[in-house]
Length: 178
Image 1 (cartoon, rainbow, N blue to C red):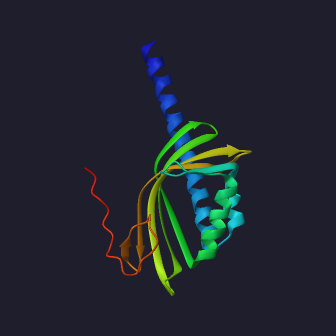
Image 2: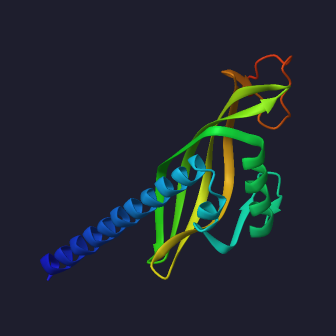
Image 3: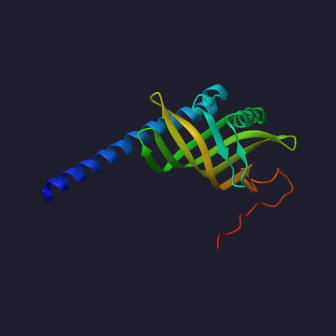
């Protein structure tokens, strides 16, 4: 009887691992689609990857609705010049059910931006939690929160990601965690 229970438990663990691997591969494909859409400056393709009720929760407690997030995306494209590159790396994945997954993702990107009258290379990286929901067989990004460990560089110089660019500012050094 104990052997049967162990076999059943092993089968369940194997099935869960298989589901996690399948969901991870599906989400990695969605991130690749998103990266290509950013490179193409295709806001419609990016918005098609989101749920209708998509939202962003910022560290200070602010929240952007789907409408506001769309405005932010359009502003991003109006302020940034190609080439725009964004890469994503899934750090952790929690499958909450067949149609909900939570991902801790590392995002790294670069683009050019007109700052102080000059086209400058702007690079960033950030970690954030993203919740994905499967709708009609397709994974859609439902929300972004727990945004942290933000870094930004302009022309290779670290800058404070929470402040406007100042070409005269000293290189930014984030406070060390206690």
